[in-house]
Amino acid sequence: MPFIKVRENGPYLVDVGDEVTLIDWNGRQYPIARRPFALCRCGHSKNKPFCDGTHREVGFQGAEAAPESGTPDPSDPGR
Image 1 (cartoon, one colour):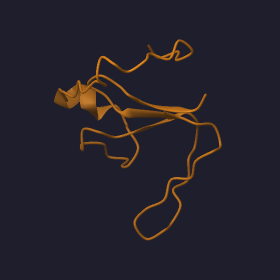
Image 2 (image 1 turned 45 degrees about the vertical axis):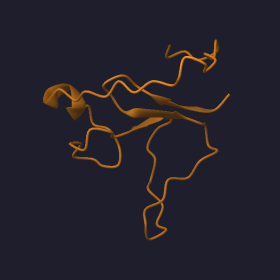
Image 3 (image 1 turned 180 degrees about the horizontal axis):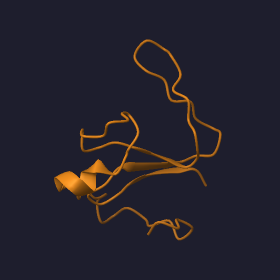
Image 4 (image 1 turned 120 degrees about the vertical axis):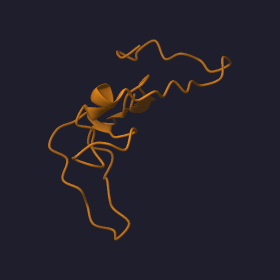
């Protein structure tokens, strides 16, 4: 099942196969070199909108979580 995962203290992991196109505000498509891909959440990537791992260097803190009433997906390999 396609999903977007909010990684603790990290990026958004986008694992949706070929079912998504990433476009900028002008409607231009970003080339996606590999899938799944990660989108920067810390704001410090030098390859925005993609994550380059800089969140680890800058000590990014982002531990938002879904409400406890959310149902975990047992097929999610990133759990």
